[in-house]
Image (cartoon, one colour):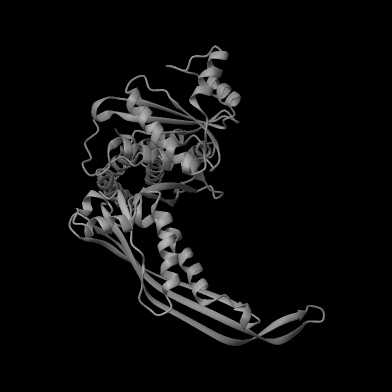
Length: 438
């Protein structure tokens, strides 16, 4: 009987399983909690960045604009001036915001020099000539942090350094220092989302090779299943090789495929069995790696605990869709739940509102109902994928997102399926991990 793994939590069901050109490598996405402890923070006011060095005012203004735009997705933005006016009037800041986001430019250096170089002017015959060019380099150091309204505690700070270089054959052709610095800051903020919201990172694992000639045909057969996209069958094949032949590389491969499909708890359980049976260093190494992923998931759960379940699940479903469907796509989001209709409709409404804001097109439900009636099709209960594809085509959608509910009590999960209407293929099926728990 399977024993309880107290420290293990199932990893999020991942939508993107990408098989790389190299036959022994598997790439997948893994979820991560924000780098900053923003648990419990939803309403945020952005204070103007301070400019400590001389001439850094435009950079501070650029930073304020950049982070305000980027914070608008994970948080509800509140006017900073209104929040400060309320506090000045003696009202509680907590009535308006959960935190103030603050930042400052701590260093700004511009170096402009004249350099000598050599350039090629002819290949045949090969000729070069010396030339003079102007070079401008900027370096900007800045930091940012949250201040909680409840107790004034600081979350952060995060410190960044941005650098940028520009060259020109004329001094007048050089980009001005503040503008060059603003360009550098914008590039440095490309990963800002990792500090303030749940995100994904790409992970690549290398599958083990068969240790002996006798097992190579079995490994090749499992690898072929993986290449064909049948990950579960490949995983089961590697498990069978381990159970029948005691092959540690096969067990490691099975654990990797458990990890890639989001079944982290089962991967930990398998490798604990292998370590108990063999004590092999490679098995210990893989178990340690899996337990590090468990720790990451526990951190994400701690963050999620501060969100309402429906809000958290809707947010996770949006993450999945953003990674799966290009912005501007025409989506039909269908409520296929047989119970908890109000709850599922609320989740769908939240998702549609956010998707519309991000540039997606949502097919009206009234149009869907009209087409279904004309085609004499019923959209309740067990609807065939072919019917979803047929109605979606007539409605002009290119993707249908089918949302339902499974289980009850503590086992209740949102069930999300994504169909590509143009090809009729299933693009995503949500799993049973904690990310989908309601």
